[in-house]
Image (tube, rainbow, N blue to C red; front, side):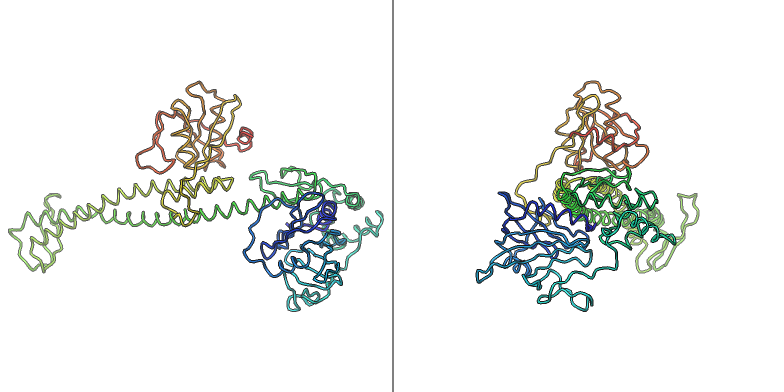
Length: 577
């Protein structure tokens, strides 16, 4: 999401309070749209991020780490030349605009004190970072805008910096509440909504604020004017309660604003922050973490899908072989009938009709190779029969192995989809390397096999410890090494899923604990979104790993089954904090 003018103004205020008078230490440019400036202020070091990314444009102090290119870009070298060692005089936002200015004082090559300005314009696809001199002349910018891109405003070295053309809109500060209400009422004539009217009419208005004003007003123009002016009053008094909104299903960050937004009701989870900067940094850091997680997950998923596709092709080949093998008995009958009647057969015939003693001597026509003798034709059919018989046997064995491998790869894919952190995905990659699906070259080479991280920990309502694996290696470690033979073991029925163990060591387990453990086993499986899930449970001593089986692949007996209704919120409550 793009930050609106109000949020940028609040950010600039907080940054000015912390960084004014600070010294610019180091400057980095990590990409075409991101710049990081380290500032020493009031005895502390700060990392100031400026981003002109189309969808993630912002300015904030950050704890996020970045990789820097080996060779700094030209714009970075210019910033270092003009700003390194400089003193920050002011950080301010242009009223009603999405522009933040950093004014810095530094010395030039002649040791003269000069002022420079670094302008951040997070304006969606028009976003930019621009460096100007004391005369407001552009030294350089991350993105050059010439007349072929914009006829109204060019951003090129040597030109004077100009603010973007001001839209034909009103400044709400010039209106009283009565005038504002009247303006809203007249603007909504013709059926236009309050939110659209506010966006079309007033400077500095953003879609999220316009929707909130309309929501709180309930469609009343007087109330809309009052709500709008109340927001402006909070802005003037710097009275913020920055709030993050998270998706209830996967805890993904969805929205942020300077205040709680009533328009979302209880649709999202909410978290309030002390500072606007912390809220903004947390929002984008969370989104970046999730993006990296998705990228890593997708890269592994691609490998799994390629291998599954390869195996499905193999299944098709072997199933065709089985269909061919269905004719093998006919070849055997041909060979046996020819052998039994060799004494009456003559050579150089294309076919011969003989009584089939397998079907009450019904006549059977047998094709022959006229270039071969009857005995050679019989031998040829025996060879075909044995070849088809061998091929059928091999194909049946291979189909069993392939189905087991497909089941294993599907379990890996399911574990990957349930992965919640990069460490777990790294373990899955390591598992694929050990299984031969990935070469070590695809990963950072390690002399020793990476240690398997511990399983997830939960506590039942009775206080009993429940462990749950997050991937096949963890499942195997949990079931075969961590759990004792008398612990209770659970697994979703007939579907790939996590191994779950109640650490009871032979003690009786209450129905409540058993039900909660079954909920956990269901949650970390493909049945997590089903209305009902069947979970098998047995003692660990009845769980075995077949010889040569893939990691996490086990068989079990002496089990019972419990039916549960998956409940993600309940499972989250049981999770160890």
